[in-house]
Image (cartoon, rainbow, N blue to C red):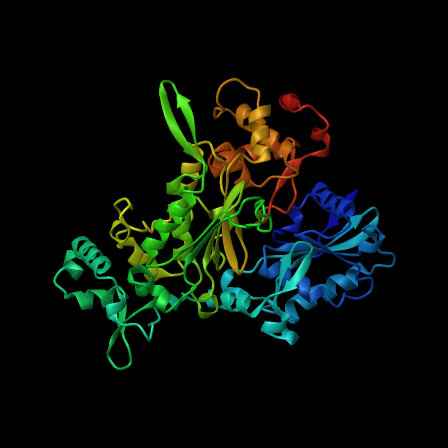
Length: 539
């Protein structure tokens, strides 16, 4: 049995909210796997802190937070360390966090008791974006910054550190003049469409101005030190005749692979079914990328009554939104200008990968939320694309503009996939890149949900109906997050949160992290896991 003792008096603590069962589960999981986890790190620290403690503090602070457990021996199956001086380690750890880390870390540190022996638990919170990177002061920013990866701490690269620092203020890489380009390098047809749109939408502000003045106000062009008008990076990428003359790798690289990995080959030795590099201005690249993916996908069908409907592997509208997001929100810093946007199609999935992780305070759980305002890394590029016609750059394109710039892209993607019965996309983000994966078929836990939910008809909004479905998902997966439940159940966050809270209160679900932790997940309790899910109403 684990019991806890507060060493600091007063105030709420994340560790206070971590249940005994959640901590027992975390330690039991590490015993089973024989190693630490993404959000838990065990340190022996018998009489003094281990030399690598700063790496773990930095890794958790620069990542999603985590808990350090001192007084357990990983080499002895995570058992308590004999002679562990809990009070000494608690003081030393508090001093290290406050005095030897930049910025200082306000860790929540408690002594808790495991099998009659004391351990020290320290919750390291994730820093706000403008405070990152956290680093070991004596090592300096570029040598002492780490991030948590799996069960270890990896030193951040210079590129990753620069990206963190660049988020301290609004990036302006898209507003930089391209020194070798001239206004003649912009496509006249695209320029005319942009100017017509802007003057029509904002007649009092722009309607009476000459074209060059409007282009300057839109940051399509800027005057260099000699007074010559030259395109900005945003203007050239969105409206240029051939931006790759100046930036040869700012392209969309499409590849269709025959198998599930890049190394699988066809019988004749070819590793690609199709390969195409999309060039030109952003509107043209997007349409070419959608066309390349479409010609390599299957088109199935479904019948509703007397009507037949086409069902593609991946809906074109969802693809267009995802690709648009990738080129609009990617990193355009000098270090990333040699990196393309990659559109990789495999036998079972399609991946869209771009340089640069999520920008600002947006997290993966925020994607698709109605209540979170998006952050924009490339604000001038986004504004220009909002008024750039997509049909003028590509004969087969439908009418409209490249981007809505309203933060609705991810919602459209989910709705389009749901419309044809496809699973929700999988988003992954690191400091260096962002990826979005579309799947051809349903994921295993979604299939299990459909197969095992036995109540008649479609799921309704009754408490019993939703809670039963939550149990089915938790049973199919080792643990589940609030975001995963929302996606699977297609219900709002308040609705799902209320049902989860009820199941936690009844002892059916157990949180795996402290309350309000950004990496919170839920699993079936040990008591309930041995029972039939259908009996939960009487549990």
